[in-house]
Length: 46
Figure 1 (cartoon, helix red, strand yellow):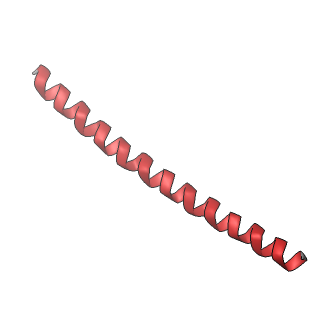
Figure 2: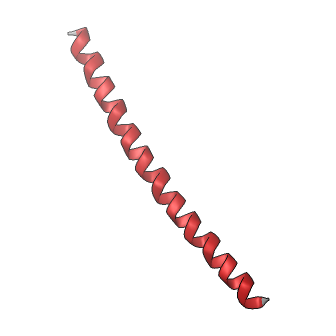
């Protein structure tokens, strides 16, 4: 039973780390898109 709980905990830890990387990557993508929109808005003003 103890080995099962250790494996289960490690599995959740791996998923948590993978989830953080995914969210981080999504944040960077969103920042890039936001910058492009901002640049387009600035160009439209001029």
